[in-house]
Length: 226
Ligand code: CTP
Ligand code: CA
Image 1: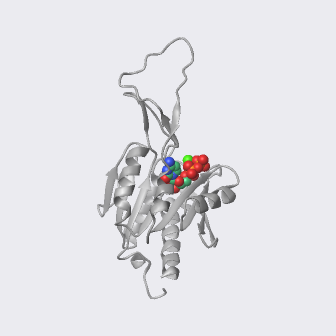
Image 2 (image 1 turned 120 degrees about the horizontal axis):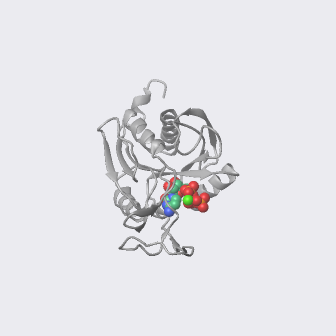
Image 3 (image 1 turned 60 degrees about the vertical axis):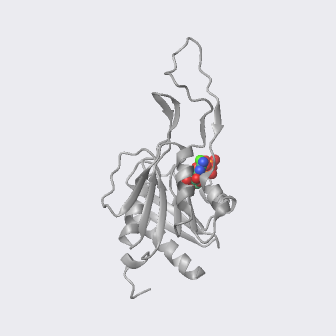
């Protein structure tokens, strides 16, 4: 690898990345969502392009713009829409990274008219969304499939469970309770775990630098497999 510059590590590879939160509609003016801003996913997309890859970025509603036009961006709103687009795109990509914070639940009923308030409390029934990553794990052929795990306790234990349960090739575990990591900020701290259980600690760094490291580990693990 010594003679190969970093910017060529992903040459010829097609990378599919999901980013941001999803929004699950309650009525025409309200929705459920989470604190994801999309920064980690956008950084992955930009770092992958800088390393020579062809990139498709599937993103929930975020206020970010891409700093280069070599990424193909597809905007979605709900978990269901992300499910459809990720499955449409899956087969034509070599590396698939799910950094999106997909809503686990959505309102069972979406009201066509704005809900009116009453005097008493409101009870909203929520139902599960489909687990996109788990479904991709079941359909996997030659893709190198990477998930993210956002945890506030026992990150390694819970993250490894996701690696196994979703049939991933690697998982990037974030302890989102730690200062400098997780939602919103410009930095992250993570542990990259390959399915062989080989672990790499990624120290506090900008999300772009963390993305470069994650992509370098992926490229190296793919090389070992081939
Ligand atoms: N994920 C997904 N579809 C869902 C929920 C999660 O594809 N409906 C993906 C995320 O994009 C991420 C990984 O699964 O790559 C782990 O997400 P996370 O929220 O950490 O784990 P969950 O499996 O949803 O479990 P829990 O939230 O209960 O910890
Ligand atoms: Ca979840």
